[in-house]
Image (spheres, rainbow, N blue to C red):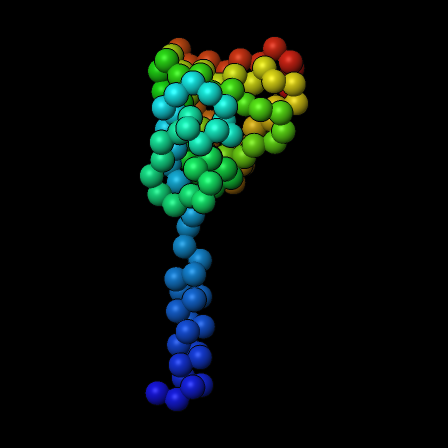
Length: 117
């Protein structure tokens, strides 16, 4: 194989396999901050162990996740019955992307926000 064919083979390989999805599926396992990796268990690929723009997130029963000040992003969020997303931190913002984004709050799930964010 000459160098030219090898080069093009590498480029084709990178184009085909280099653009893999980095989506993770996160489940809250402890009360805590959205940006604390110890609050989460996850499957899939993720660089920082914290949910971000392309991830699917679930907050189960008896768990409260507190959103810090600033803008966090997620692809999908489900708050199960008895789970809580606390948005009471001033300046806390959660973007759930409109292009396929999903917010599901099961009966008994809670979003707290006394700051009118």
